[in-house]
Amino acid sequence: MFRGFLPATGFLALALALIPAASHAAAAEAGTFTLQFENDLFYGADRHYTNGIRGSWVSPPRKDAINPLPWVRDLLAWMSLNENAKTRLGLAVAQEMYTPADRRRTDLILDDRPYAGWLYGAMSLHTETDIAAHGFKRMLDSIELNLGIVGPHAYGQEVQDWVHDIRVIDRFDGWDNQLKDEPGLLLMYERKWRHDPLGAYPDNLEFDVVPHMGVSIGNVLSHVNVGGALRYGYNIPRDFGPPNLIKGMRTLDGRRLRGEWSLYAFAGAEGRYVAHNIFLDGNTWRRSHSVDREPLVADLSFGLAFERGPFKIAYTGVLRSREFHGQPDNARFGSISLSWQWN
Image 1 (cartoon, one colour):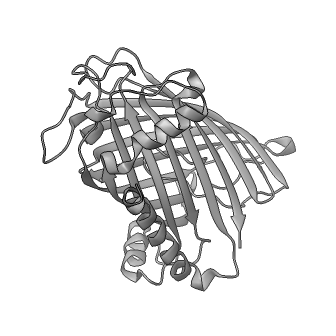
Image 2: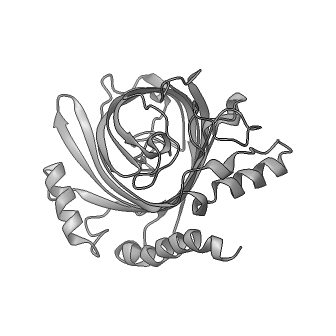
Image 3: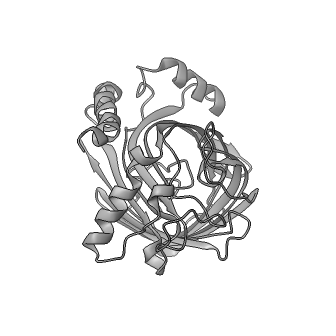
């Protein structure tokens, strides 16, 4: 039992060990902590991507925020074409889980997706640059590395059973058919731009556009993605929108308000060309359950965000197109994120 928690505690210990080194030069400034929870029970479902949880920390923006990794800082400065761009370091631990639709069956369900859990630690590095090109004012380059495990030692079954018992929901009976243990590696890069084409309306009502593009490579996921988001509301912060756990890259949080509080609505869309998805294609080096993956996947999202003082809360609803042949319906899930700044 205790041996089973070694991967999770190892990731947490790694994150805690790295925080002091990353924040040494920025000790006088506030970092941002974020908790994210995603689940399809927001829409009365319990299948496909069924749950995700992530705890993360992002350093304040500084030129010397990642002195322990100068070569990565130089790489990010090269990508942003601005050697004076400030950088941030992010650290996180997270877990995701995936299930088929029929919770009662104990046999292998050949025409539905495999059971799978994914437990990982993450390190991300970001450069944010002020630009003046084609009406865009700010650009964000991000690299994230995820290292973890897919399979029984990701503890998807144990966490789901625990949550279902607390909420008095029937357990899923087919976890014996989940993907086998496999070390997971995922490297992601994404670029975002921010543009407020109309400037500020009266009473601090604002509208902005945040397009993005990226690529992910690894034995967990490999895809290219392009998309964007629209935001409208009161005193929109000068960031890149609320975080989204499952799509890959995380958005930076930070206090960039011109007033004391902010409230805005947002809507977004993203398309992906998927070359590999272990949660559909099965284990990489061992025989396992798999289904025929759809190469093109799209997400539509909408939500509401509120920020006051050091705290920010956001809700996002996501509609995802079918990810494999024979999938009877689109996937839907909700996401809640809570962020706060702390010295």
